Length: 82
Image (cartoon, rainbow, N blue to C red; front, side, top):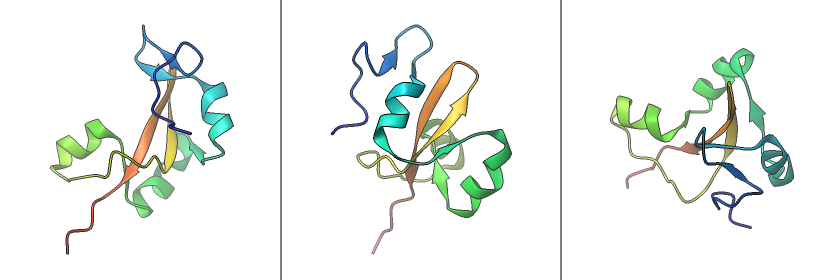
């Protein structure tokens, strides 16, 4: 299952965020404002946060979801460069 599909079932085109029902189906952790410390400890990044921090992320594998006022954004792990 590709969690980043932008269909009517999964994605709100107006807000450009994923729907809660879609995120629940994924079975991945769903974080909110209260869980921010956990997100930072696990080094999870949204695309926007990674760009600001100038960090490369693996955008193919969604690790979790983060709650925004109108939906959810996917969170990704930092790329490990060997």
